[in-house]
Amino acid sequence: MASAAKGSDQLGELDQVTRAAIGPRRVGGIYRSGYRDCQYRVEEVLTGEAAWAVIPFSDFALVEVDLTGPRAGRSRVHCTAWDSRRDEIVEMPEHHRR
Image (cartoon, rainbow, N blue to C red; front, side, top):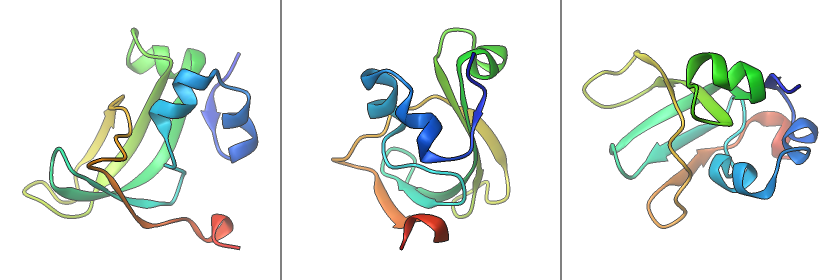
């Protein structure tokens, strides 16, 4: 029974498809969406039952805040898979930079 994934240890317990969809995104990191052309900060990574509670068809959900773009400041929950061809890491969280 998985819930909010705070560290990479919990993400390691997920199946390969879900880990690939989450990609390098971690709580506190800032990323650029190539699809939406905006930057966002990940607030939570939800998995298992916690994800199903907000997106019933997905094994993961990201809670994020838009930092740039037309709706800067807006909080969103989504399950958009990471696409290394268009998405970018802007800044990894401090605990992942060591």
